[in-house]
Length: 288
Image (tube, rainbow, N blue to C red; front, side, top):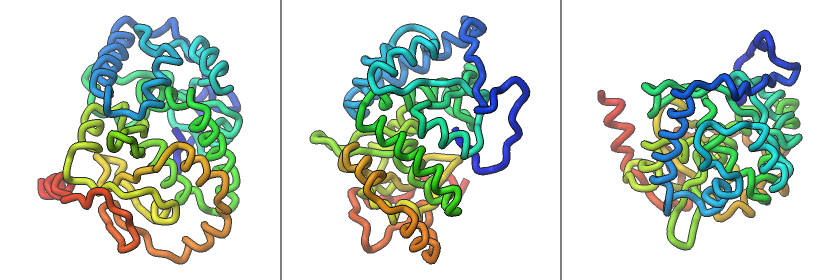
């Protein structure tokens, strides 16, 4: 929900950019849209999403019909890991986003897509933010990682390294895969909240699937307008948290400042490759 460009705080928002969710104002159609998206994604994600994500759905009782009430959701989340969900009208500035995360508050859009936007929406809505992100915040390890990321973001701004840290978030929190005893599993919110990418990220021969390497990942550009051309695979959420807590980021940013970026479809000699993708999907889109 952070934005890399300058934003003007909308009228009616607090200093921290939060707004009332105004749950009672949702229409029957909006609740029905949530239910349709929820039913479609949960049916698809069984056996495909990380167990921790599926457990979070149960812990937070997100199967209850209709758009969740953030106040009730936050009560359950607070009991699990000390986090809460706060409503915002849309994208928020980086410093606001990092401050919320550092204080165990997850910002979520309070609007939902139209029925004709079920498969794609350019700006994150309540389904992406709550269904995609919040279940893993019920997992203590991932919850600690997200707070550590927020604190890291507060430092990154003064070091001119927001872009590097944004790549870390993009390729893990939004579009990450995790190893499992039964193969790879989905956990990134941008994947689990998308019908098409839930299939593409695991099954399609087109994308690269590469083991997580923080330096490599921070050098890698990404797609914001289509399916990813490379997915990074973590060993575990414990390993992800360790990377955030034990890395000295200031010298890492300085080291990376002198390196060339890697294209979204790039493969380099040091990669531990799980799947060397054909890139057929991206090539076909380019050709059309």
